[in-house]
Length: 115
Image (cartoon, one colour):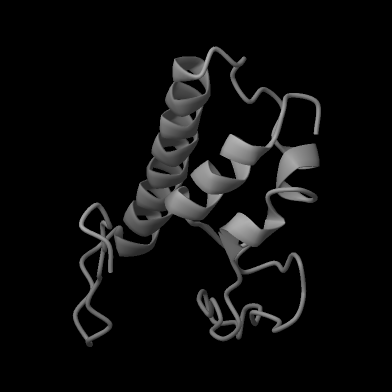
């Protein structure tokens, strides 16, 4: 790991506090938003415009900066839920996957606006 790597780990044991699922969803949303904010700061420091609408970038040039989730599922509420799909660019459980700040920063440093 790099010195600036942040790892957030949750217990997968039998005890999960009330609201655990909602907390994790909220935390991942805030984490992804923080990563995008840091990427915007990086671009602005290079006198480039902020990222704007992300889908074209995330589904093309920056897809290598997303870590695919290849196993796991989201069971709950008496259902089996959905399973992550290996080799799929998007699935119901994880969407695109998890953003890798350093990879995305490197990709953006090589791109010009208008991907």
